[in-house]
Image 1 (spheres, helix red, strand yellow):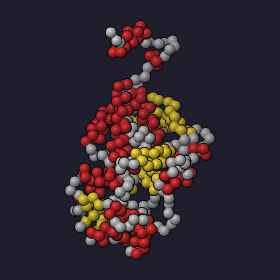
Image 2 (tube, one colour):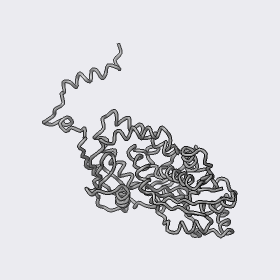
Image 3 (cartoon, one colour):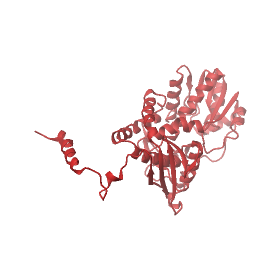
Image 4 (cartoon, helix red, strand yellow):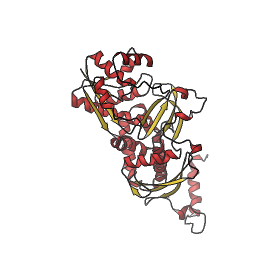
Length: 390
């Protein structure tokens, strides 16, 4: 048997690599996606080989992640439960996609992941792999094995000579990529208390952020962010640079009690500095270039789009169809939005677009007003007819 394992080099996936090899008498191919996470991946390949992998893929996928997953979510304004910018959920279909591609190339019988039965990710991985290749078996060793505690995993690692970190346990479950960071568990489970200061991974405390506000102008072409302060940048470079700037000003923190896929509620904190600024800027630009009915309909669909990403239905027909709707609108979304960053806030200060539907002559109540006020009276009469009783 040959298995492709989504491997991070952490405790769970390191133990899983050895456990799968033993349990299934299998050849294990480890796959690690570099999508801009905080932890170093310099030694991942060597550690996987020492643990027993026959082959290791460590691939830089930040560009693909942003272009094929984060950008469509940005253009759709995907916020799960109107808050969470779904950074982690967006990465799972990419990881699943690459595992399936590697499985096909290597002739593997199954893929495996390190998610637990209680979390969302086991659903996302299983759903994504099934959508791409229903004949591939999806293994979840952390759910299936007899190692029920961290201590038992560490004991297994020691027994089998598996190299894992022996530093003091981090009380939080942390997942990072270039679009955002997710932090859960530990003290965060107490929803009566604010997040501890040390739980945040990327952003400055807004209270101690710089006293002076800073402005940044984001240029969009066809719905794609392409420039900062007039300087053309590739998407990955733009997100990285903007993320550092926004994080310095404490922008992008989210604290949410969310409804998990598996049915219960959990508390998580998230940091998405670049995504927060880009989402706000993209929304401001659409507000001036889209007509009212299209804009309002798109706002309704944004929540559904976020749900599909969060639920693991990225490869569904509905998500693709929503992408088609969003894509037809993006050619209009060209222009510049200037945002001001200050102590955790992100505020628009300027909007410009060659496609703007805003008319100062119509909006003004001062000299130069071109609105036909007499026509307005007739419009109000007709508009009220559906509410008129005989």
